[in-house]
Image (cartoon, rainbow, N blue to C red):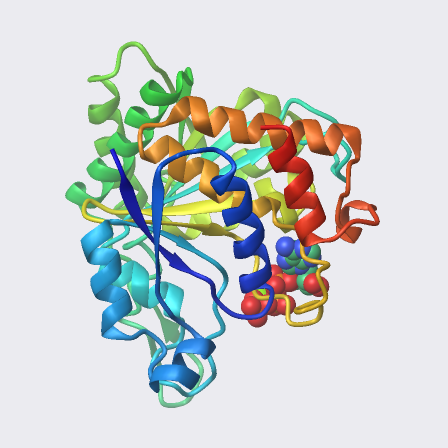
Length: 335
Ligand code: ATP
Ligand code: MG
């Protein structure tokens, strides 16, 4: 079977890390076809639009996109292209693995291997019901949580656990204080959990979760939570394992899924061959899992780990003297 994916090379370090990632994917004989599409600053310059219709059509058709970071210039229509993509394709699940890797600067030598599943479309980030009183003294915000939205994200987390052989889902909430929104989320999560007796489910209040993550991160396997809590917790988890250089993310909807690196365009190092391609490569590994190729995904992750262990051609952020492409070649040679 040949699968076509939409490839967005992006801005800043985007093209460099994408070329490196495709070099590694090409070495794996996956039968993947790439359909290149533009978005971000490069699209604005070429087509006069940040997010051209052709790019949206390509993602809609292929249902899978691998995307480098994008620059959203201020004052060009939307506040963020990433948020716009999330809205257009109703990408309700933001899935962020955090795993300790050898020879990376992190607080925990090993033992962190968890996935945050963040609800991506509701909660505190709906962008509605925000107001500031005329005297500037009082600000209000509306949060929205629905049973449907809660159910689909919690179900996604449990299905992910089953598919990847993970054992436990922790539902993170603040239902003791945010009784309506977090309360509905928790109640819905409990109902979904009864359908998955093979997966352990526990509940944890978000503030305690933060402390527990820092003190005993090994107790977590999959975390599922609402938008705002998930935003904060997933960055906290990236910090536990050494920062953004190794943090991938997926935005998943019913009709499309977009895989990416969590970091931005890093304009300070763009065009210098210094960018670490691992986050995007790990995003590609998530994509392979999603495509039903878990053995290939594992092979890719193992090659990355072996390269880090051997300190072979690593980029400067990892203390190496290699560059983006030499690092990718070292990974490809281990596949
Ligand atoms: P943007 O505006 O697109 O978010 P940014 O500079 O605000 O870009 P990041 O791109 O996330 O944010 O970069 C933060 C810091 O981390 C920068 O100093 C950057 O050089 C570094 N960095 C980010 N990604 C990488 C990478 N893949 N390899 C090496 N360094 C990186
Ligand atoms: Mg940034």
